[in-house]
Image (cartoon, rainbow, N blue to C red; front, side, top):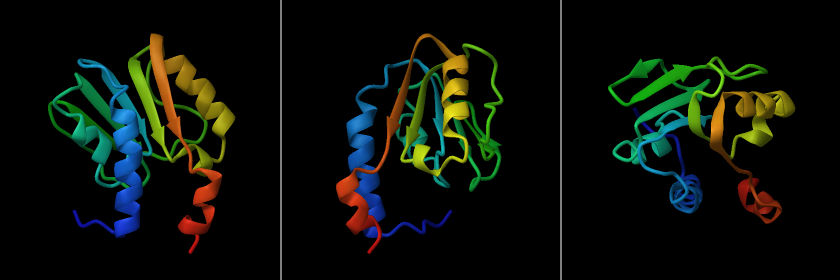
Length: 132
């Protein structure tokens, strides 16, 4: 799969992922909402996690023994059972959602009792760089 990322996109992704990956425990079920065409974060953590799920409107459905990618644009519902994941990540995704409140409520529903939701959004100072 060819990447359409610029060097700046790759740098920002690298910095974001470096900051977040240290918070993911071993042997967990991780849902990455907006995982991107390459499912970069899930693939990076493949050896660390028990199972990875990736949702994105720009990917093809595919799976292997650890990672399942689903072509899906989340509007208001996450198609998973209650309390089924340990971690949910949304890395630079929240600001693109049509219904962020509903999606956050759904995140709460599908997270296990001591689960974690990790969200990143662009910093206000990044605006001029991201919009050049």
